Image (tube, rainbow, N blue to C red; front, side, top):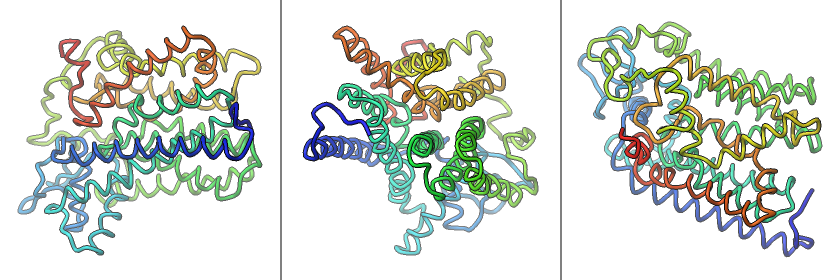
Length: 429
């Protein structure tokens, strides 16, 4: 295992880890402050999932509303109608997990969900968004120490994957994007340990399969990333990798069972456009940014470098792209096999978005469809960051990209991820 300069003894290593622990504690406190400050309102995107949780806890039903009964929450536009009943259009696995957690809290405290909704929401955000992302950053630190001798690179990457990353900015809001990003990145790090370590234990394969399946089931266009992780396992140890398949299929099968139970059809709601066409549906007559249909050229421009652009709002990810290109172009590129398996999933998601929608994800901060692969993309930039750190100009350039990436995430943290961002105003949105 590589260690950093000056880390030649146990006390130095302990000092480094102690510094990182305090960094993680600081980020955790920042996320907690944001969570407790902004849970006084609930915009339509997270509200769709939260209503499902409330109805399961308080009324033991998936339905948001039907004649004679409705949730006390304001209804969300993210809804479908089946046999006169309204349901969330969001994939069901994540709300089901949160509902299980909320039911456990309810059984211990007796608190009704709606009356104590702020308390429930904070617990759910901490359990499902904040703690997993902090775990991810801890694992990233371990990953970094295997691949660089440079303290500059270590701390730059920890900052880039923290306050400069939209996955972090969304962590204080109920959403599937930060969760899927966390699952995919942790899965990638575990696969790396298996391929470049002792081969891993059986439970590692099972865990990776479960995380990949769960991430896919809650972020449907990201399936290529899940398949990339499984492909890496099969390339390394086919027999052990076969054990990951049942765990990969488990959350997917569970999701299909939920769809079958709710609608009588196993297909995800996103594949049944007729369910969105009912009287009073927002999707009958779109408004605002959802109603716009720019040319595909304009759409691609804005989703990459325009007012919602992946690289205009998170320019630090340019370093990841450079790292990917270098790795794939060189005969002995850094983790070349890993990136060969993961890049097709990233490209497939981007192509899917380009050709299946003009949507930017609604009135939200950044191109949220791409959050699920952003931390992975950033990891590919480790060698580039290390190279830039060898010169003063290189450090200035890297820091400029880092600092430009931070403001949008702070807005997401302390306002709400699903509202128009500052950059929209600059572009006259």
